[in-house]
Amino acid sequence: MSPQSILPTPGITDKLLVDSENMTSATETNTIRLTHGEKYLTSSWYKGSGEIAHKKDGRSFEVSATFTLKAEVKVVEGVFQPANETLANIYNSRGRCVAVIDQTVNELYGEQIRKYFDAHEIPLKMMAFRAWEADKTPETVHHILEFLGKDGCDVSRSEPVLIIGGGVLSDVAGLACALQHRRTPYIMVGTTVVAAIDAGPSPRTCTNGKQFKNSIGAYHPPVLTLVDRSFFRTLGTGHIRNGIAEIIKMAITDDAVLFELLEKYGPRLIETHFATLGEDEELAEIADDIIYRALFSYMKHEGTNMFETYQDRPHAYGHTWSPRFEPAVKMMHGHAVTTGMAFGATLAVKMNWLKPEERDRIIALCQSLGLTVYHPILEDMDVMIEGQKNMRRKRGEGGLWAPVPRGGIGACDYIQEVPPELLEAAVTEHKAVCGNLPNHGAGVEMYLSDLGLK
Ligand SMILES: NC(=O)c1ccc[n+]([C@@H]2O[C@H](COP(=O)([O-])OP(=O)(O)OC[C@H]3O[C@@H](n4cnc5c(N)ncnc54)[C@H](O)[C@@H]3O)[C@@H](O)[C@H]2O)c1
Image (cartoon, rainbow, N blue to C red; front, side):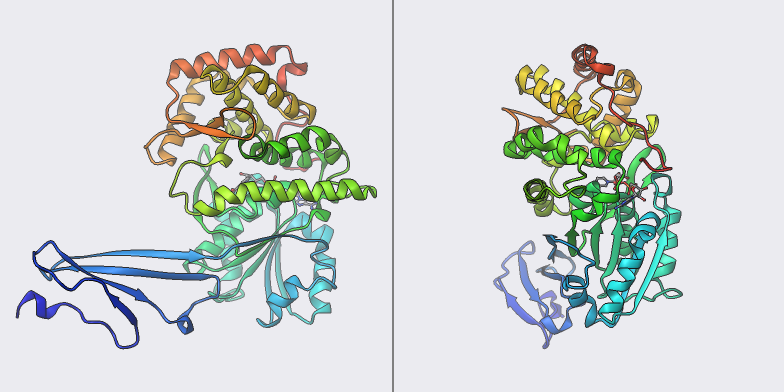
């Protein structure tokens, strides 16, 4: 039998497009594009297609496939007020809602959530568990999987799990959803500032690994993120401050207007927990505007690069060295990130990418909000160099690709490599710059307290 005659032929139920049939040499390929019928979709959020190219020799072929997902982000009011039908509309047709909730959030909002689903006559199966930074482990992921799996709720591959909590919960429960049936959709209701504007809509689900934060995980974004700032009312002020760090990050790298809004309103946003304490309608509107701008900037870059197939990622600003030093000194994530951002700004000045006065403006904003801009751990070159090594591996060995501001606030570029001499010189300069600041650049409530901040 000739190799040509044994080549596979199109199946009768598939819609096929044969691109090239004129194979004249053994290396030439015949490409078949395959589109699957809509009726076979596993769930409405995910699609895919691909093509298979077989060679004339009849002994080799190549496949390329594309996975498409739809992820929506909405700033909403009163997500668990019975009049708000967003979640009811999703879970009504499914006959139940399977939810995972942070224990503290359950204590504060559990009753309201149960009443919401009761009012809409939707049975609710909700597991509450402690989700502190110390609980961000593979064991916790297993624990959630027991709840979702065969001996628990037996969640189907098309059933969106509801996740309600902060960044720790979105990371571990998101990862559990990525593992359940290899991919189960989920809806995220972020109840902290970090979860609302960063960890919540993020595709990066994970647990901590030994000595290196967030090192085990999967890319699995929520299909819907609902951002409702009313949850911030009960959040410790330290956690509000911590969360604003991620908004500053997007302002510096992508949105100069957002930076100006933070300079003007940042302290009041912390004081009023994003206009949820007191009744200031004008500030409430500004708070929503700031949240929306931060989300848009973030998803503009993150959402169009969901699987981190590219390393030009502005939202990694402040996250190059901090994953190594954050657990070492047990800093709160936001404080570690602002330390990384402030240091990155000094590095950018050293490279002539940024003017000293622009770096000083960045430091002044962080300091006005009580965020850390300097920590002596920066001087530990072993930690810093190891951090770079880890990050280089994580970013694919093509470069360190450290994002830092370039050409002014609101834009950034990526440093491909930071040689040890430059790293050390930048640390020395940053120490000198921060030496005159109150507390030498330390922030308010900068250390992690899993007992919760008041
Ligand atoms: N995946 C990502 O892209 C990404 C991005 C940023 C941060 N993160 C991760 O997020 C984590 C930090 O998240 P976080 O700051 O939300 O911390 P967190 O999840 O630990 O929550 C902070 C504390 O607030 C409590 N809480 C949550 N909502 C509350 C509410 N409305 N009222 C009162 N208390 C409430 C929690 O129980 C917890 O004690 C870190 O582990 C970080 O690595 C991930």
